Length: 379
Image (cartoon, rainbow, N blue to C red; front, side, top):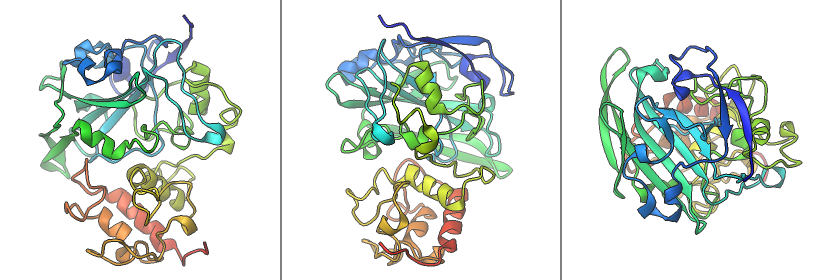
């Protein structure tokens, strides 16, 4: 058995049940690659446990403390899910490693890879503390032994002491929250197993967040007060940490992350990234899993695609229900791309699933980028 152990100090304390949200160092924990987390699902859906307490993914289910074999990570540009807070983890079977393609290309995932994402509904829109939020869902992507991926959603009960595997149909539930100073409701959508693969498409690398450009960020460059952020040297690159931890196989490309693509944090106006970089990072994370130039050939919103090759600038929309041009330089309000962002009409709004609220901050950012454009570059 390959022994791969590394010691870390974790911040954002609910991760290990260490207390509140203040940046107080937690005890040093030992991470090991030997995991039981969702390994029974490697054979398919029949192996997915009914209750999350039987998954092997939580050391203390009631306190929401994940097993020490789950490794936390962050993405630069998160998917918008109506303001929900998220924690993300990777679990690998003993001795296994992820590997990144040359020059930061497509990653490969061994059988038994488990990607975990928790969804927490904040009590207030302006309060990003996990200690004041409700854990409502944990989602798993499991790389099966037949090389396919399985997607599973677990809904947490009222007292958040355990979570039950949802059926193939999915579910939705409304939670009471405070918004703009008054009482409001937050509708959380639990995807069906089929819905998982509307975004995590089989014709592309299924995991959306485990990509070089998404992970290529400094640990201290937090998107939110993330529960999954790793303490230590705040300037250490996350890719370098994943290699040092043994989760990712070393490569020449990963040894020089400053030469690799790096997405920006869209809402971090003080990050030093340009408006274009931030807007394009948002569009990549929230749109390009469908709009990547093949499934919808009219537009490619991938982060690394030059504007001249996006097939969007002054390009006709394949649907003319709210406009005729996908992106009009200097005029966001005439651009179909932006108009769909600010609509929640089922037949008009984008993205079409997983959200019922406009991400106004992102819409303003994309409008700022479009309005800054003076024309379309030559192909």
